Amino acid sequence: MAVIAFIGLGQMGAPMASNLLKNGHQLKVFDVNPQAVQNLVQKGARAATTPAQAATDAEFVITMLPNGDLVRSVLFGEQGVCEGLSPESLVIDMSTIHPLQTDTLIDDMHARGFSMMDAPVGRTSDHAVAGTLLLLAGGTQQQVERATPVLMAMGNELINAGGPGMGIRVKLINNYMSIALNALSAEAAVLCEALGLSFDVALKVMSGTPAGKGHFTTSWPNKVLKGDLSPAFMIDLAHKDLGIALDVANQLHVPMPMGAASREVYNQARAAGRGREDWTAILEQVRTSAGLTQHHS
Image 1 (tube, rainbow, N blue to C red):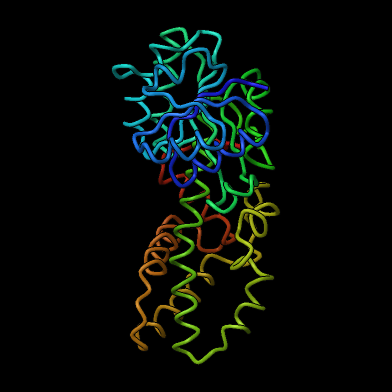
Image 2 (tube, helix red, strand yellow):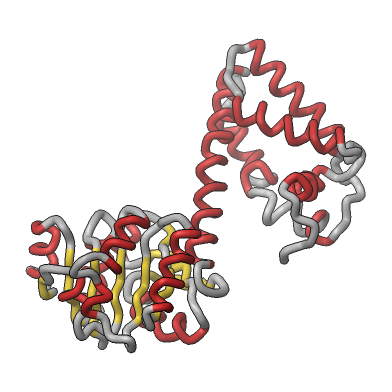
């Protein structure tokens, strides 16, 4: 079993640390909240008074903090992790922070002769308690293999995201998509209500279509991702249907800012001559707008 320093005992960190203890690891803990530290000490952890003290003799140092600036100060600040860290140790940042900050942190640690990877988590604090988190590991193959037994003490599924900094990238994009989709879904649900449509009926229909399943797994794999833009459902027709929905919403005084914003993307695609292409060509339209000229698989 490993000797682990755990820094950041908040809503996610505290149960994650508890699960490391339950799985037989030796734990040294640090947090600015003394009560959070005390709670873990009662479960068998040792308290550290500074990040440096926590890191001393630890094989792994896990940080679970609210933002990138705090991660930086814990690592590099006065009495920070680097002051007590062995070059043989592995630092695992499990916080959800800015991916470009993650890149800089990993580079700065490497420049000082230390090893660091990112492994943010998916799912909720309930899963943290149950030990069923989704672990998104960003690191070298060697780092990910080394960290896996420790990470799996806190979760039940690990995805190797494909290199340093890639864990936080996939976490961010997943959250971006589900958070934005939450707002779009709310517009659709309210439009159901305004039109007098039973939500149960909508639920039954959407659960079998791209509306509920998402395009990554339904419309894209057989069309745009194969380079096939022959129309199964034309952009011109999608634009027409979107327009009808926005018009009826307008008449019923239902605000549809997400839908209105998406219509501009369809307008761009039509202006670019893509009107008769498949609706999945929206992906190519956005790629062109972003100045990306080659496919990223």
